[in-house]
Amino acid sequence: MPPVRKSKNKNNKNYKDKKSKKGSLETMSVTALKKKIRDTERYLKTNEKLSAKGQVSLERHLKACKLSLIERMAENKEKNLTSKYRMVKHFDRKKVERAIKKIQKQLNEAQTSQEKKELEKKLYELQIDFNYILYYPKNLKYLALHPTSGGDDGKMISKRNEIRQIIKEAMQSNDLESLNKRFKEEIKLQVIEKMVNNESRKKKENQGQERDEEKINTSNLSKTLDDDFFGSEDDVEKEEEEQL
Image (tube, rainbow, N blue to C red):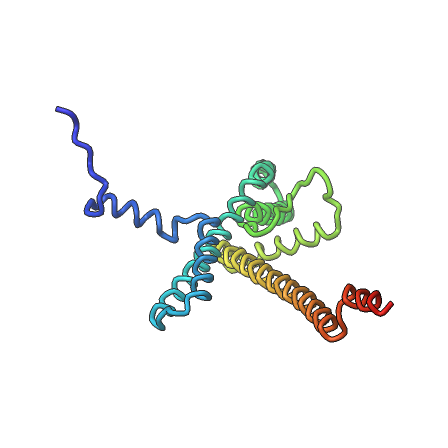
């Protein structure tokens, strides 16, 4: 007896689950979400027969789509930056770990309190470096602690020290874990700012196109009025020939 295939009808629970999961905002790609937002915005603008209740429902759905898009774009940016600088961070971490082991060994062998104090200070700075690597802002290009080139660039040094100070303050307040949440929110703000700028640019482009069309229409209208009132150039030439 041949095996019985499960029917993919609407009464099948698995079919329903797969269908609902496929259409879920949480699982949609950036491209799919952008398309859904465009389609929803277009529908809201063009459908004049939409009821008040239906409009409110669609506006809520549109807002949910935009929030999901922000989340997805922020996740993608974080993943891309993490992947891009994974090896650089790996090399930095290995160097810092070796330096920490060396200082700890020297600390165990230290004879005087002054020597211990100096080594403890070095160890603390290395711990800051280690946390710098672990908790570096995930919305920014990673600035290596031991760069192979451009290490003497003033702006780079200043930015590295600024981030290092943020890490240091978080260590002092025992609040390192909150940094990840803070940096994720900063990624979202960057995404929102980019979206707003893109929308503003598109509006300006559309307004520019409308102004160009108005100029063309005005020019055509002016020419038509001149032709109607004074006659076109062809008509004027014909009249002059007839008079001759």
